[in-house]
Length: 254
Ligand code: NAD
Image (cartoon, rainbow, N blue to C red; front, side):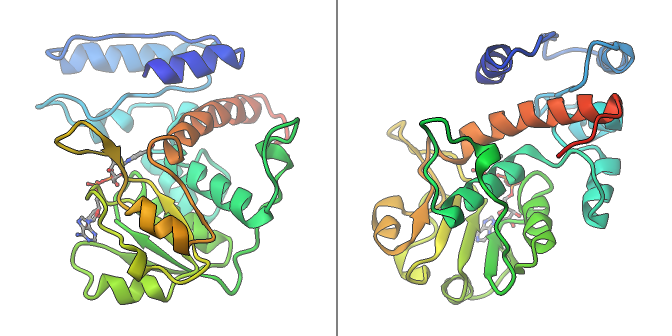
C-alpha cells in the first residue's frame, strides 16, 4: 500500500486514504466506498484485499462503481474482459503482458525509452501456459494472452503432468504461490518465463514460483522475484486510474 501511494504521488496523482480498523462494520465500509463513488475528484478506487474475516472482499468489490474500479476486479469489468471490450483490466495480468512485450521487443527500457514506446507483440503461433487459475491473476492473464492470439493452456492444481505441459510452451506464466515449483527442466530452450509468485521462505527470503537460478540459464527472458511483476502491478494501478479518468471524461485512449 505504501508503494502504491508513493508511486501515485510521484506520478502526480492525488490520493485519498481510508485506513479502517479490522473490526469495521459492513455499514461503515459500504459508506466509505459509496462516498468515493460519489466523489468527482476520484477516478480510481482500490480496496486492498484480502479483508479480515468475516468481511467478504468480493461483495465489497461489487460496491465499487465499475468506471472507478482501479483493480479491474468488478464483475462488470471481468465480464467486459471476457468479451474483449474496453474496461479496466486486473493490474498484475496487465503487468505480465507489459513485461512480455518488453521481452519480445528486444528493446531496453531507460535512457528515455518507456513502456509506451514498446510495441504490443503479436502472439499468434505462440503457445502459452498459465499455471494457476485465480480470479486475480491466472484467469485474467489467460484471457489477455488469448486476446493477443496465443494458444493458451490454463493449468492448475488438478492438471496432470505439469512438466510436459510446460515443456511445450513458448511463454510460461507462473501464478501459483508454491516456492520454486517450476524447474529449469520444465522449460523449453528460449521460452519467456513470467514469475508472478511471491513466497516467503522460513529464512525470510522472498522467492517466486520458478527456480530462478537454473531457469534463467535456459529461458530467453525471465522476471526476478522480487523486482519483476510486483512493481509492474503498482504501475498498472496508476495506468488504470489514468485510463478511467480518460474514459470518464470522454477522452480517447490511444
Ligand atoms: P491463489 O491461491 O488464489 O491461486 C493459486 C492457483 O494455483 C490456484 O488456481 C491453484 O489451482 C493453483 N495451484 C496451486 N498449487 C498448484 C500446483 N502444485 N500446481 C499447479 N497449480 C497449482 O493465488 P493468486 O492470488 O493467483 O497468487 C498466486 C501467487 O502470486 C502468490 O504467490 C501471490 O502472492 C502472488 N501474487 C503476486 C502479485 C504481484 O503483484 N506480483 C499479485 C497477486 C498475486
